Length: 105
Image (cartoon, rainbow, N blue to C red; front, top):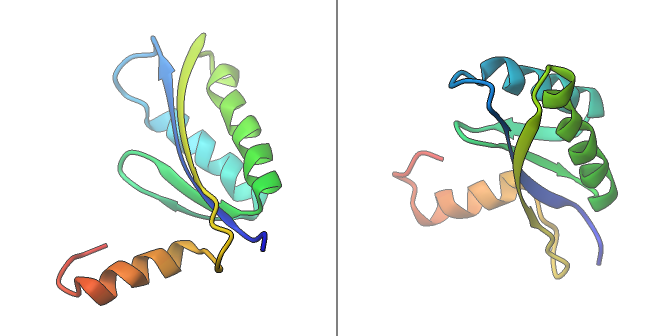
């Protein structure tokens, strides 16, 4: 069974200073254009889609810091590809909430 994957993406432009907000905002704009479901977290953005859609998006988002003048970028990508049952961001969150209702996720 091939379905959706969940990717956790962190892109850090190197040598651009300590404030990264403008880079993050432009990366999010690129993600919005994709139409994929996503969630911004304090240190990464999580995206849900087919493996082909997600990998294509990662390639586009990878270019954003360079278009803004960065000369080097560090990227961390984690992909959860589960094939034995459907996978979704909401499903993973609901699973934790069911086990730990007092925890905010």
